[in-house]
Amino acid sequence: MHLTGIDEGAAGSKPAGKGAQLLELPARFRDGDAGAAGAARYARGSASEALQAKVAQAGAEDAFFVADLGEVKRQFAQWTQLLPRVQPFFAVKCNPDRLVVKLLAQLGAGFDCASKGELEQVLGEGVAAERVIYAHPCKPASHLRYAAARGVELMTFDNGDELHKIRQLHPGAKAVLRILADDSSARCRLGLKFGAAPDAAPALLRLAVRLGVDVVGVSFHVGSGCQSEAAFGDAVERARRVFDSAAALGLRLTLLDVGGGFPGAGELGGLDFASLAAVLRAAIDRHFPPAAYAHVRVIAEPGRYFVASAFSLAVNVVARRRVEGAAPAFMYYVNDGVYGSFNCIVFDHQRPRPRLLSPRDAPLFASSVWGPTCDSIDCIMSDGQLPELQIGDWLVFDNMGAYTLCAASRFNGFNLSDLVYVDTEGALL
Ligand SMILES: *Cc1c(COP(=O)(O)O)cnc(C)c1O
Image (tube, rainbow, N blue to C red; front, top):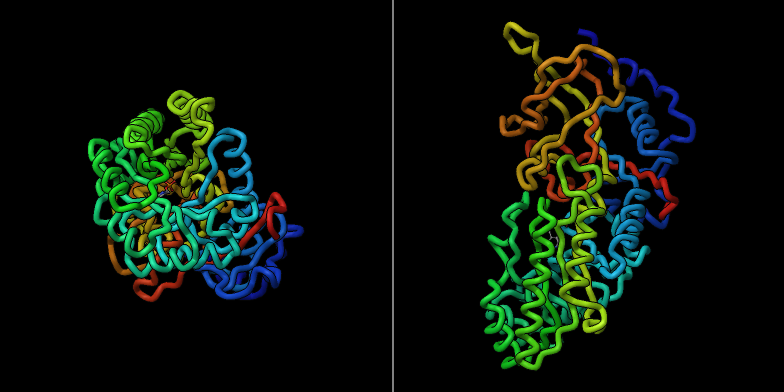
């Protein structure tokens, strides 16, 4: 077997594409931890130039991400254009990458944080407390105290015990009632865990009044990876009914939070953002007509939407096995897997598909792709068609920016994948 790339790599670096050499991050981006992936670098030029430059480095073998901050900026611009009435609060859990958070802060986004750690990160970037929603309906006391100390007031709740806790630990909070939405079509259902049933809302509002907790609005989440535009419209209507219940109690609510669940760009089989935005705009205008509801501010908590398409992951074929049988078939072993960045297969129900970094016209064979650990659950693609790969070849998985690195482990002694930034819009670097 010819071990393509290994000898050449060790002998010295191949010439990279023009303008695509890897550079140290500018000093202002280097303070502290350079991100989940360690010492990140950046490349001038496009994501594909950065992919080529990185694999051309001497001894290149480790898996790595290329993150295009320009793509995040383009997604932000599209949001502003298609949902002008809805202010996005980026759901940090989806991808807490430092430069992504910095960029979104600079663009004027708000942030959805769900823990003390996320609050610390976002406030540490200099984001004002008013631009943060603590969007977790079940908060540990110490995290709630931290929010109070730092002046983060906006927060969700969905049960009476949480209202008692808020009254005790953060009496100045502005509480947002999270209601259940129909998430039956979503890839990740969140309603199994959170959200007050619509008929429980009036009693919760009454309890809040009795406790003196200031309820300012309603939120919902249609589920992550939502596959139904109608779910958004339906949830906006449900929210409106809670506004009506509140009005009957003399409460004038001022915030509608339509949550997350928006598709990432380039996702196979996902919703189309433009048509979803049209449905959502229409639902908001119908149930919260601007003339009568000018006092209502509308926000959202998109996570996946901003980051999915901004990150590509390159992995190296470290071993392969020819499968015995009539027709040739191959198993390939690569150096990131389900315990690492591909945890999105287990937790986020993604089905990443690879492409060859250097495409070629060649016959296709039945192929499976496996992660590096000793566990057989560590399978990235169980049945696909690929040209015959050699050890040392590179595969690229696009749309890997959401729910990937943030939940990766070092199980079995394997490192987290490295990270290279590019900035095709001159957004930050
Ligand atoms: C995870 C989460 C989000 C983000 O969801 P996406 O599907 O990534 O947009 C928003 N809000 C809350 C409360 C969440 O738990």
